[in-house]
Length: 108
Image: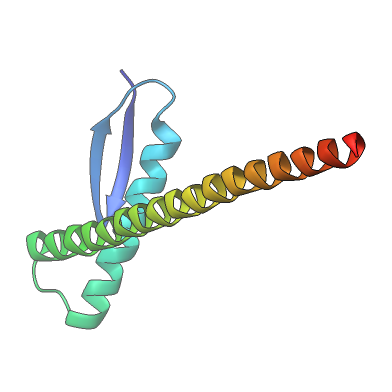
């Protein structure tokens, strides 16, 4: 099992991961490090545990917002599908009426 060295808030961590997951793990750790750097820049060194906790909370908030946006977009898409389905049914009815009228005109 591969091991990756990660640095978050100036501290190094060695983390095991699955084969091929190393680069993704580095990117994720880099994102956490950015948040930790942001927090320590705003609040100063308030302790490693608190900085990591705050970084985790900020990331969880971003994730929750992303899930809410996904749910909103799904609802919107479902609404559009419903409108499209309704329009499709209406067009089918109109087409049937036109065909009926055309048939009557041909008989006349």
